[in-house]
Length: 331
Image (cartoon, rainbow, N blue to C red):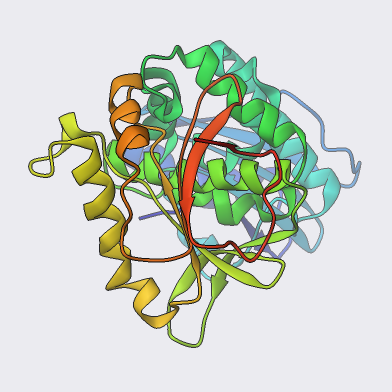
Protein backbone atom coordinates (compact mmCIF):
# COMPACT_ATOMS: atom_id res chain seq x y z
CA UNK A 1 0.00 0.00 0.00
CA UNK A 2 1.18 3.49 -0.81
CA UNK A 3 0.36 5.17 2.50
CA UNK A 4 -0.27 8.89 3.02
CA UNK A 5 1.01 11.54 0.63
CA UNK A 6 4.59 12.62 1.25
CA UNK A 7 7.05 14.59 -0.81
CA UNK A 8 9.98 13.00 -2.56
CA UNK A 9 13.00 15.31 -2.33
CA UNK A 10 15.51 15.36 -5.15
CA UNK A 11 18.88 17.02 -4.55
CA UNK A 12 19.59 17.31 -8.27
CA UNK A 13 18.95 20.21 -10.64
CA UNK A 14 15.92 20.08 -12.90
CA UNK A 15 14.66 22.05 -15.88
CA UNK A 16 11.36 21.97 -17.74
CA UNK A 17 13.07 20.03 -20.53
CA UNK A 18 14.28 17.39 -18.08
CA UNK A 19 10.79 17.25 -16.52
CA UNK A 20 9.28 16.52 -19.92
CA UNK A 21 11.86 13.86 -20.78
CA UNK A 22 12.21 12.01 -17.46
CA UNK A 23 8.89 12.58 -15.66
CA UNK A 24 6.19 13.39 -18.20
CA UNK A 25 7.29 10.95 -20.93
CA UNK A 26 7.13 7.72 -18.84
CA UNK A 27 3.82 8.75 -17.27
CA UNK A 28 2.39 9.58 -20.67
CA UNK A 29 3.47 6.18 -21.95
CA UNK A 30 1.81 4.42 -19.00
CA UNK A 31 -1.38 6.40 -18.45
CA UNK A 32 -1.57 9.28 -20.88
CA UNK A 33 -0.33 12.47 -19.25
CA UNK A 34 -0.05 16.18 -19.84
CA UNK A 35 2.05 18.94 -18.32
CA UNK A 36 0.21 21.99 -17.02
CA UNK A 37 0.96 25.13 -15.06
CA UNK A 38 0.06 25.02 -11.36
CA UNK A 39 -2.95 26.90 -10.03
CA UNK A 40 -0.80 28.70 -7.45
CA UNK A 41 2.75 30.02 -7.26
CA UNK A 42 5.33 28.69 -4.81
CA UNK A 43 5.97 31.33 -2.16
CA UNK A 44 9.72 31.01 -2.76
CA UNK A 45 10.52 32.69 -6.12
CA UNK A 46 13.52 30.40 -6.67
CA UNK A 47 11.16 27.54 -7.54
CA UNK A 48 9.54 26.79 -10.88
CA UNK A 49 6.50 24.48 -10.65
CA UNK A 50 4.31 22.25 -12.80
CA UNK A 51 1.31 19.94 -12.52
CA UNK A 52 1.16 16.55 -14.22
CA UNK A 53 -2.36 15.33 -14.95
CA UNK A 54 -2.99 11.72 -15.96
CA UNK A 55 -5.90 10.46 -18.05
CA UNK A 56 -6.83 7.97 -15.29
CA UNK A 57 -7.34 10.77 -12.74
CA UNK A 58 -3.91 10.52 -11.09
CA UNK A 59 -1.92 13.69 -10.61
CA UNK A 60 1.47 14.91 -9.44
CA UNK A 61 2.99 18.23 -8.38
CA UNK A 62 6.62 19.07 -9.02
CA UNK A 63 8.58 22.18 -8.07
CA UNK A 64 12.28 22.67 -8.64
CA UNK A 65 15.21 25.06 -8.33
CA UNK A 66 18.95 24.51 -8.80
CA UNK A 67 20.03 21.64 -6.56
CA UNK A 68 16.61 20.91 -5.07
CA UNK A 69 13.19 19.63 -6.20
CA UNK A 70 10.03 18.23 -4.60
CA UNK A 71 7.62 15.69 -6.08
CA UNK A 72 4.17 14.93 -4.64
CA UNK A 73 1.57 12.74 -6.28
CA UNK A 74 -0.79 9.77 -6.12
CA UNK A 75 0.51 8.19 -9.30
CA UNK A 76 3.43 5.97 -10.27
CA UNK A 77 6.75 7.52 -9.27
CA UNK A 78 9.10 7.91 -12.27
CA UNK A 79 12.38 6.03 -11.94
CA UNK A 80 14.66 9.12 -11.53
CA UNK A 81 12.87 9.78 -8.21
CA UNK A 82 12.85 6.24 -6.81
CA UNK A 83 15.78 6.59 -4.42
CA UNK A 84 14.92 10.02 -3.09
CA UNK A 85 14.21 10.91 0.53
CA UNK A 86 10.60 11.35 1.67
CA UNK A 87 9.32 14.32 3.66
CA UNK A 88 5.95 15.15 5.23
CA UNK A 89 4.21 18.48 4.85
CA UNK A 90 5.83 19.55 8.11
CA UNK A 91 9.34 18.45 7.13
CA UNK A 92 9.36 20.08 3.68
CA UNK A 93 10.13 23.82 3.39
CA UNK A 94 7.16 25.95 4.40
CA UNK A 95 6.77 27.62 1.01
CA UNK A 96 6.77 24.28 -0.80
CA UNK A 97 4.39 22.67 1.68
CA UNK A 98 2.04 25.65 1.63
CA UNK A 99 1.96 25.65 -2.17
CA UNK A 100 1.25 21.92 -2.44
CA UNK A 101 -1.51 22.00 0.14
CA UNK A 102 -3.19 24.94 -1.60
CA UNK A 103 -3.09 22.96 -4.86
CA UNK A 104 -4.59 19.87 -3.21
CA UNK A 105 -7.27 21.81 -1.36
CA UNK A 106 -8.28 23.56 -4.58
CA UNK A 107 -8.72 20.16 -6.25
CA UNK A 108 -11.04 19.07 -3.45
CA UNK A 109 -13.04 22.28 -3.80
CA UNK A 110 -13.71 21.25 -7.40
CA UNK A 111 -14.23 17.49 -6.96
CA UNK A 112 -15.81 17.36 -3.47
CA UNK A 113 -17.07 20.81 -2.44
CA UNK A 114 -19.18 19.26 0.35
CA UNK A 115 -15.93 18.13 1.98
CA UNK A 116 -13.89 21.25 1.32
CA UNK A 117 -16.50 23.27 3.24
CA UNK A 118 -14.98 21.78 6.42
CA UNK A 119 -11.57 23.40 6.39
CA UNK A 120 -9.99 21.70 9.41
CA UNK A 121 -11.14 18.21 8.39
CA UNK A 122 -9.89 18.85 4.85
CA UNK A 123 -6.52 20.12 6.03
CA UNK A 124 -5.96 17.38 8.62
CA UNK A 125 -6.84 14.46 6.35
CA UNK A 126 -5.35 15.94 3.18
CA UNK A 127 -2.48 13.37 3.18
CA UNK A 128 -5.06 10.58 2.77
CA UNK A 129 -7.89 12.38 0.94
CA UNK A 130 -5.47 12.79 -1.98
CA UNK A 131 -3.35 9.65 -1.53
CA UNK A 132 -3.02 6.76 -3.94
CA UNK A 133 -4.78 4.16 -1.80
CA UNK A 134 -7.09 6.33 0.33
CA UNK A 135 -8.49 9.00 -1.93
CA UNK A 136 -11.73 7.15 -2.72
CA UNK A 137 -12.34 5.22 0.50
CA UNK A 138 -11.70 8.05 2.95
CA UNK A 139 -13.98 10.51 1.14
CA UNK A 140 -16.65 7.83 0.80
CA UNK A 141 -16.44 7.10 4.53
CA UNK A 142 -17.20 10.71 5.48
CA UNK A 143 -19.91 11.00 2.83
CA UNK A 144 -21.77 7.69 3.13
CA UNK A 145 -21.10 6.62 6.72
CA UNK A 146 -21.14 10.09 8.36
CA UNK A 147 -17.66 9.24 9.73
CA UNK A 148 -19.14 6.39 11.76
CA UNK A 149 -22.22 7.99 13.33
CA UNK A 150 -25.44 6.00 12.83
CA UNK A 151 -28.61 7.90 12.02
CA UNK A 152 -26.63 11.06 11.22
CA UNK A 153 -26.04 13.15 8.13
CA UNK A 154 -22.61 13.56 6.61
CA UNK A 155 -22.73 17.23 7.70
CA UNK A 156 -23.30 16.24 11.32
CA UNK A 157 -20.42 13.77 11.26
CA UNK A 158 -18.10 16.25 9.58
CA UNK A 159 -19.00 19.03 12.03
CA UNK A 160 -18.18 16.81 15.02
CA UNK A 161 -14.63 16.25 13.79
CA UNK A 162 -14.33 19.81 12.48
CA UNK A 163 -14.93 21.04 16.03
CA UNK A 164 -12.33 18.64 17.44
CA UNK A 165 -9.64 19.40 14.88
CA UNK A 166 -10.23 23.14 15.09
CA UNK A 167 -8.82 23.02 18.65
CA UNK A 168 -5.41 22.04 17.26
CA UNK A 169 -4.83 19.33 19.87
CA UNK A 170 -3.95 16.79 17.16
CA UNK A 171 -1.98 19.06 14.82
CA UNK A 172 1.36 17.71 16.02
CA UNK A 173 0.19 14.16 15.34
CA UNK A 174 -1.40 14.77 11.94
CA UNK A 175 0.39 12.09 9.92
CA UNK A 176 0.19 9.51 12.71
CA UNK A 177 -3.55 9.88 13.15
CA UNK A 178 -4.67 10.67 9.59
CA UNK A 179 -2.73 7.84 7.99
CA UNK A 180 -4.59 5.27 10.11
CA UNK A 181 -7.76 6.16 8.25
CA UNK A 182 -6.36 5.94 4.75
CA UNK A 183 -4.19 2.84 4.55
CA UNK A 184 -6.52 0.10 3.38
CA UNK A 185 -6.74 -1.74 0.05
CA UNK A 186 -10.54 -1.50 0.09
CA UNK A 187 -13.53 0.15 1.70
CA UNK A 188 -13.25 -1.33 5.19
CA UNK A 189 -15.92 0.48 7.20
CA UNK A 190 -15.19 -1.41 10.41
CA UNK A 191 -11.51 -0.52 10.36
CA UNK A 192 -12.22 3.14 9.59
CA UNK A 193 -14.79 3.36 12.37
CA UNK A 194 -12.22 1.86 14.72
CA UNK A 195 -9.75 4.54 13.67
CA UNK A 196 -12.27 7.28 14.46
CA UNK A 197 -12.70 5.78 17.93
CA UNK A 198 -9.22 7.07 18.67
CA UNK A 199 -10.32 10.55 17.58
CA UNK A 200 -13.34 10.20 19.87
CA UNK A 201 -11.13 9.35 22.82
CA UNK A 202 -8.82 12.24 21.90
CA UNK A 203 -11.87 14.52 22.12
CA UNK A 204 -12.71 13.17 25.59
CA UNK A 205 -9.15 13.68 26.79
CA UNK A 206 -8.96 17.16 25.28
CA UNK A 207 -12.31 18.15 26.80
CA UNK A 208 -10.98 16.97 30.17
CA UNK A 209 -7.87 19.13 29.73
CA UNK A 210 -5.52 16.15 29.89
CA UNK A 211 -2.15 16.02 28.07
CA UNK A 212 -1.81 12.97 25.85
CA UNK A 213 0.44 11.35 23.27
CA UNK A 214 -1.00 9.00 20.62
CA UNK A 215 0.48 5.75 19.32
CA UNK A 216 2.97 4.96 22.09
CA UNK A 217 5.48 2.22 21.29
CA UNK A 218 6.23 -0.20 24.15
CA UNK A 219 9.10 -2.61 24.79
CA UNK A 220 6.56 -5.44 24.49
CA UNK A 221 6.33 -4.72 20.78
CA UNK A 222 2.83 -3.29 21.10
CA UNK A 223 1.89 0.29 20.34
CA UNK A 224 -0.87 1.42 22.68
CA UNK A 225 -3.23 4.10 21.50
CA UNK A 226 -2.44 6.82 24.04
CA UNK A 227 -0.25 7.82 26.92
CA UNK A 228 -2.26 10.16 29.15
CA UNK A 229 -0.10 12.05 31.61
CA UNK A 230 2.12 8.96 31.76
CA UNK A 231 -0.72 6.41 31.93
CA UNK A 232 -1.46 4.00 29.06
CA UNK A 233 -4.83 3.87 27.28
CA UNK A 234 -6.04 1.31 24.74
CA UNK A 235 -9.14 1.90 22.58
CA UNK A 236 -11.50 -0.56 20.93
CA UNK A 237 -14.79 -0.15 19.06
CA UNK A 238 -17.41 -2.89 18.74
CA UNK A 239 -19.15 -3.26 15.41
CA UNK A 240 -22.90 -2.72 15.76
CA UNK A 241 -24.83 -5.99 16.11
CA UNK A 242 -26.33 -5.76 12.61
CA UNK A 243 -22.84 -6.04 11.10
CA UNK A 244 -21.70 -9.01 13.23
CA UNK A 245 -21.93 -12.66 12.25
CA UNK A 246 -22.15 -13.61 15.93
CA UNK A 247 -22.54 -11.73 19.23
CA UNK A 248 -25.62 -10.19 17.63
CA UNK A 249 -26.78 -8.40 20.78
CA UNK A 250 -25.20 -5.06 21.76
CA UNK A 251 -24.26 -6.27 25.24
CA UNK A 252 -22.58 -9.37 23.78
CA UNK A 253 -20.76 -7.18 21.25
CA UNK A 254 -19.29 -5.03 24.04
CA UNK A 255 -18.26 -8.04 26.10
CA UNK A 256 -16.67 -9.85 23.16
CA UNK A 257 -14.83 -6.85 21.71
CA UNK A 258 -13.58 -5.61 25.06
CA UNK A 259 -12.59 -9.10 26.12
CA UNK A 260 -10.50 -9.60 22.97
CA UNK A 261 -8.14 -6.86 24.18
CA UNK A 262 -7.45 -8.86 27.35
CA UNK A 263 -5.59 -11.50 25.34
CA UNK A 264 -3.68 -8.96 23.28
CA UNK A 265 -2.39 -5.55 24.39
CA UNK A 266 -3.85 -5.73 27.90
CA UNK A 267 -2.25 -9.11 28.58
CA UNK A 268 1.13 -7.38 28.30
CA UNK A 269 -0.04 -4.10 29.85
CA UNK A 270 -2.67 -4.92 32.49
CA UNK A 271 -2.24 -1.47 34.04
CA UNK A 272 -3.61 0.27 30.93
CA UNK A 273 -7.08 1.81 30.90
CA UNK A 274 -9.45 0.42 28.27
CA UNK A 275 -11.92 2.66 26.42
CA UNK A 276 -14.73 0.85 24.58
CA UNK A 277 -16.33 3.14 22.00
CA UNK A 278 -19.97 2.32 21.22
CA UNK A 279 -20.46 5.31 18.92
CA UNK A 280 -21.52 2.95 16.09
CA UNK A 281 -24.54 1.80 18.13
CA UNK A 282 -28.04 3.15 17.53
CA UNK A 283 -30.05 4.74 20.34
CA UNK A 284 -31.81 1.43 21.07
CA UNK A 285 -28.57 -0.57 21.06
CA UNK A 286 -26.87 1.90 23.37
CA UNK A 287 -29.90 1.91 25.69
CA UNK A 288 -29.50 -1.87 26.09
CA UNK A 289 -25.80 -1.51 26.93
CA UNK A 290 -26.36 1.42 29.28
CA UNK A 291 -29.16 -0.44 31.04
CA UNK A 292 -27.10 -3.57 31.72
CA UNK A 293 -23.65 -1.92 31.95
CA UNK A 294 -21.65 -5.08 31.17
CA UNK A 295 -18.03 -5.37 32.23
CA UNK A 296 -15.32 -6.88 30.06
CA UNK A 297 -13.14 -8.46 32.75
CA UNK A 298 -10.65 -5.61 32.93
CA UNK A 299 -10.31 -2.57 35.16
CA UNK A 300 -10.24 0.31 34.64
CA UNK A 301 -12.62 0.29 31.67
CA UNK A 302 -14.72 3.12 30.25
CA UNK A 303 -17.62 2.24 27.93
CA UNK A 304 -19.00 5.27 26.11
CA UNK A 305 -20.91 6.57 23.11
CA UNK A 306 -20.37 9.94 21.40
CA UNK A 307 -23.07 11.82 19.51
CA UNK A 308 -22.66 14.29 16.64
CA UNK A 309 -23.74 17.19 18.87
CA UNK A 310 -20.56 16.68 20.90
CA UNK A 311 -22.11 14.99 23.91
CA UNK A 312 -20.56 11.80 25.31
CA UNK A 313 -22.30 9.38 27.68
CA UNK A 314 -20.77 6.37 29.39
CA UNK A 315 -20.10 4.22 32.43
CA UNK A 316 -16.94 2.79 34.00
CA UNK A 317 -15.52 -0.05 36.04
CA UNK A 318 -12.56 0.58 38.29
CA UNK A 319 -10.80 3.83 39.17
CA UNK A 320 -9.13 5.75 36.37
CA UNK A 321 -5.63 7.11 37.05
CA UNK A 322 -6.68 10.49 35.64
CA UNK A 323 -9.75 12.71 36.00
CA UNK A 324 -12.10 13.05 33.02
CA UNK A 325 -14.08 15.80 34.72
CA UNK A 326 -17.24 16.64 32.77
CA UNK A 327 -15.99 15.22 29.46
CA UNK A 328 -18.34 12.24 29.89
CA UNK A 329 -21.84 12.24 31.33
CA UNK A 330 -21.82 9.17 33.54
CA UNK A 331 -24.84 6.89 33.33
